[in-house]
Figure 1 (spheres, rainbow, N blue to C red):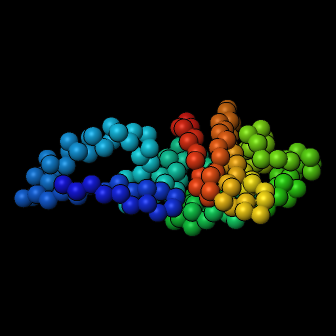
Figure 2: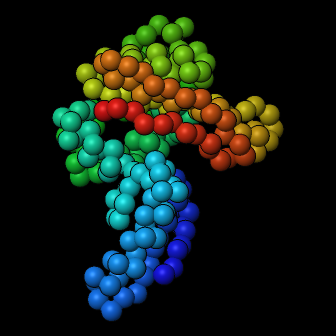
Figure 3: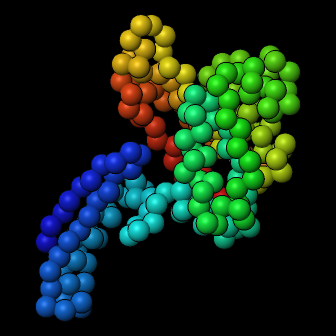
Length: 191
């Protein structure tokens, strides 16, 4: 049996490879190792086989007859670029707002210029509630990023605030991005 890892942004792949006399033999050899990997990785497993995170998200939303809008700052639309091109996105994906600054974000969300002024959990939550209502989506995902200032700002890092709004709740997290690497753990959100 071989256990391999492959890192490619934004995910890590764990691969198990086994040889067997036939498919049943391979499954017997693989089962205890697969069980142990699942036990150790737990809720960090987001997708399996050929599935990818964005497909799993769309499938979960589609299965609940739900919809999604996305709001992003400073990402250049990276989140939207992973979701929108998928074959089933037209049934789930409502709208994307990609803004470079908070005044553009306020205009796009139909709020006054002072409504969204900083990268904070409170701003992410307010933007998620507003975007969900404006687009009539059942879910809104907001990703606010602020890079540290200074001549070597990319190396310093920045702040990431995430929020997911539904009709009944908003879940949010703030994390630091260190030297160009994100360190975020959001946890599960009930769809």
